[in-house]
Image (cartoon, rainbow, N blue to C red):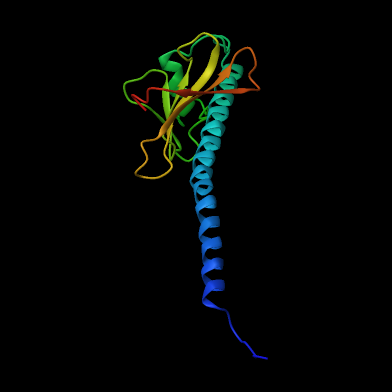
Length: 164
């Protein structure tokens, strides 16, 4: 009877193939988890923006959330000097997008956040482009908070990523 110590070449090859197959199956889920994480950040930003608009209207009864903010009032959402109503100016995370009266951006996320959105049924919306990695073309989505049900964030995939 032989006294064997160690593994045969066949055993090592089989185990290596099993590990390689598992790595191939698991790797794509890590890329998708990064996109899912970015989507959650975008949704949280949309809720933060919506709450800022609602707070603004509660403190400044110029109208209700159904209407659109006027340009002079949009600045109050981000301007720390304006009557202390700097709802979005926490740590300079939010920025008013140049050339637009209703669009904002959130640092670290490739999204355009819109107040008084382009459709009558929405309170706020975010159009975002997500990439799995630097070489990825990316996928575009729109997240919306509807007037009819503000507790739900509607998600739809966009075919055109222009302007994002």
